[in-house]
Length: 307
Ligand code: RIB
Image (cartoon, rainbow, N blue to C red; front, side, top):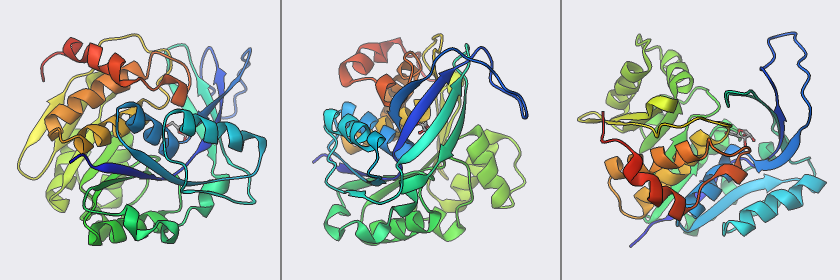
């Protein structure tokens, strides 16, 4: 039987500014236009998993502002169950995203309504042994840790995306089945755990040994690396020219969760996630760029065998 996915996390209005180059500290950079796109790491991951074919519920908070309806509609149009979204008297989360001509980005987030997300509002019946719970770090940390405790006690599988970078208590880490982060995020966690490893791959391996769970490191154009305390895997990336890398990490997380939910093993799931994340770099915006099942399936054979 396929597992269901519960995404617990953030939802943001993204204001995207295409720029020749990203500003340095103290610098003003003049662009031409900006555009609004639905975003937020949690909502992006929910949409990615749903487009991958999974049954997805999103639990999060929206304000009562003009952005909120657009953000809600984007989830609904992607077949995400929005019955667990609460409306609060605080503006919806908002992100200002600069994107340069190489597709690299710089993101600033005002958390807004995301700070009202509460683990206690997630009903027990959504946390079953056939649920994969997906979390990120844009909602209050204590709510994440509380939900992870409950989800594990009720037999769910837990995926934590370490974005944005931050500390995770060791007792919580050992409850997380799949920890996913980019190089900066994995190294930040390693530093917080006072590990001596300074290279991302070594840090990921050490974290996996310490927690006896799986640590996955996303490596951009180099693909991804995963390790548990016994084995490791390398998956390449599609060769392409990125337009906008925003939400590529979210796409990876959502697709990985969806493929695991469908019964694929870790190695197969990593390959789907890598292809999907690559495709998400070809279109501007967060949710607007997340590929559907057919498009990822069509490119799966273009991914080289593992290096
Ligand atoms: O990961 C990309 C996302 O980060 C954006 O959609 C933005 O809202 C921030 O949460």
